[in-house]
Every structure is written in structure tokens, then in C-alpha cells.
Amino acid sequence: MKVKETLCTIVANTPGVQNVWLTDKDGVPIVGTGEDHRVRTAVIEAHVGAFEQIQKLETGSHRSSIYYFEHSQIIILQQPPVVIYIVADGDANTGFVLRLREKLDPIITEIRQLFPQLPVL
Image 1 (cartoon, rainbow, N blue to C red):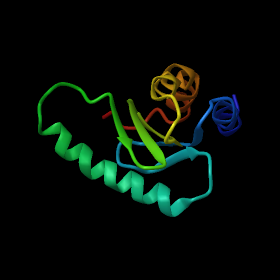
Image 2 (cartoon, rainbow, N blue to C red; image 1 turned 30 degrees about the horizontal axis):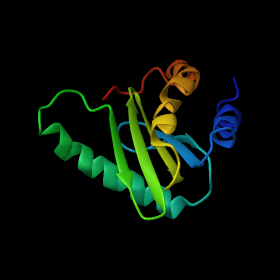
Image 3 (spheres, rainbow, N blue to C red; image 1 turned 120 degrees about the horizontal axis):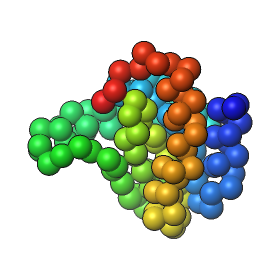
Image 4 (tube, rainbow, N blue to C red; image 1 turned 45 degrees about the vertical axis):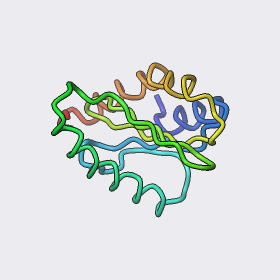
């Protein structure tokens, strides 16, 4: 499977989705779409910091975070050993975007095979 190509196809076929990035648990980029590296870096760093605080709540495993802004939304999915960052339009159907977890499963499986040493969250 061509991971980047498959990821780009999923983004192109999902209404309202602008970018998808996959990182390891520490925020190290693995693969993604889009070219705005400043935004990507800021989003990843903010989430890594927030995730450390979320773990302190002791409410069970953290599966996803959803952030709504005036013109966009950021959806972050935990899919160990990968963290998936999805940037979508503000009016995108959030439930539909959340279902990308299943569509991204083959990519996650491929990454697990390519990088078996990736630490799990």
C-alpha cells in the first residue's frame, strides 16, 4: 500500500476535510497531507501538552479530542501507536469525520508493520 497516496485519497473523498496528519505518541510526524507546517507543528505541540493533562483525570483511555473554532475544527484520534490529527471545515459533519477512524485502519496497520518499534500510548 502507498500510505501517502491512500491518505490523500481519503482526504479528497471526505467532504470538509482539509488535512490529515499521523504522528507517534510524542508528536513526531510519520505521514500527512497538506503543506502548512507551522499550523501542523502548533496543533501537535498543543495536543501533546494537553494530552499529558488529560491523563491526570484518570477517566479511562483517551480516544479522541474535538476542538471547534470559528472557521474550522480539529479532531484528534488516538489509534495506538499512532495519533491522527484531522483538520476540517467548521461546517463539516463531525460524526462523519470521526468515522475516518475506520477508513484509516488499513494505514495504521501498514504503519505498525513498517515501524514495529513505535511505542504504544
